[in-house]
Length: 271
Length: 281
Image 1 (cartoon, each protein chain N blue to C red):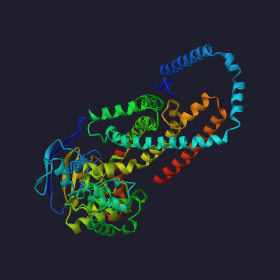
Image 2 (cartoon, each protein chain N blue to C red):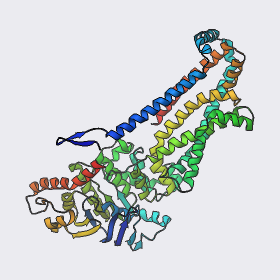
Image 3 (tube, rainbow over the protein chains, first blue to last red):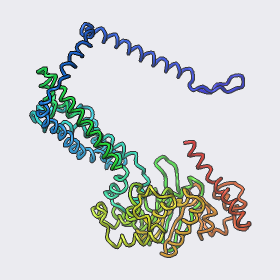
Image 4 (cartoon, rainbow over the protein chains, first blue to last red):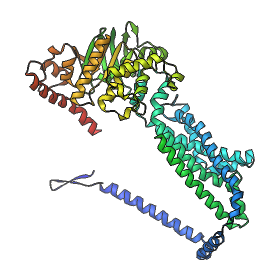
């Protein structure tokens, strides 16, 4: 009760004493746990290794500092593969995620009791597993290569696109939908005229953002054999060829910069 | 032409919006539905085209029962009822033309509507209507670029291109300034006269209703408490509908100019409970 009576004046406080106490206790417990964890980590750390960390870092930087430029030719194709894995994976994910989003949004789902939980289940499953782990499994199923990469990226992206899109669908203005329904439109027309125009900006933003993220994710899934630049990265690191690693880093940086620029342009054009 | 009998609407929460409402609207007749916020005006017209499912009662349009229809037949029935909304309810990111043509959705197949390949007669009619409401120069503008009055004109064109028998009009002027409100009311009434359309107009603005509409129906707590010409709507009747208030200046026998000012003040005070509720929620 934040309003107190005191000498005929009403005192207002943001919180009463009990709430204030609870908040203080929560902080106390939180900070204690943090400090315990800190203590544990520090006990587990071998400080001898940490102490020469600057030296190691400088050493590595020195080995990377004379990039082997002729290696660029070798990574052009894997880099192109990486972009394709990201693009095809995103398109595949959009194909599955858009219907899932309409099935999962409570204002467009055909059945709240049956179909909505199923669609939400698909979205949550996809979201809860990292692309690298999907890739690990898929390389075992499909064998190493691009296909495993594309599907790994797609499986992870379905959840991301599906979740953000169904939230966008649930936030639309219901009056516009009602107005289209009142004209005697069929359910498919109500979706096409009442719902789709309202979610177009969100859809464009989400898809392009996911494509952008996928280019970065596609660079690492090669580490487990799912195609793309990651395979070169792993073999260069394993053979301690740091002057090749630096070329790969530059290539990744450049690609991400370009994808950033492209996604900004696309988003701007559609909204 | 429109017959409503024993219409009752109870929301799942237990709130009763309408109790045993009987109302008949003749061909070409325009009625204004007045009453305080929460009296059930919006629910009543949404029951007519079953955007809201009534709990009991029958509704007939031209002798055909609306309440008994299945989903497919209901869509065909909705084509005969044009609806105009308070906040216009245009599809904001579509153009004026697309919004007007969306009134033909009930007549056109999915792919034709999706690919925007409407029959040329529909497009001709859309141009005619846009010219009639004074927006033929705005065809390609996006709906969200229009002013309130312009949007409501698009809303009117969208309702009329359905070629309806009756217009269901929900607070057409509540979001508009006084001058635009009068223009929009005049336009709706003119169009009803030109086309012999019946209309039910929900409206807060009592003086505006009394000035333009020949038959007034007062709704209070889901029941019809007045049904008659505006001339007979005196202070006692208004008290029946809205509750106790100083109604002098609202009724017709006072000096017209002075009466109008006072009337708008009264209308504003009628609006007040809704504003307070909105602020509280």
